[in-house]
Image (cartoon, rainbow, N blue to C red; front, side, top):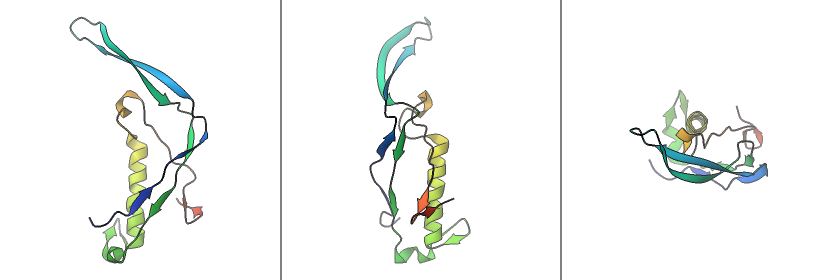
Length: 115
């Protein structure tokens, strides 16, 4: 475990940002009737944000191993895998209802493209 290595800054809006209202309800399985309607606000799917993250690597990470990598490269591999998992699963509490899908684009590490 140890100290925190990943610092995630606020994501600043670049494009879009339109707020849409999504109406949901509960279906009563016995009667088939829609009950308890509610409205949720969410950011429209075409929105783009700029996000900055900082990874801190400590001396104690020199012996850390992950995916055949060691030290700093292993820490970065964990971060990369975490980002891939977020893309696969989503972000937030309403992923199963169609919210929270994200895609990371143009990733850079120290100003250089990060594959």
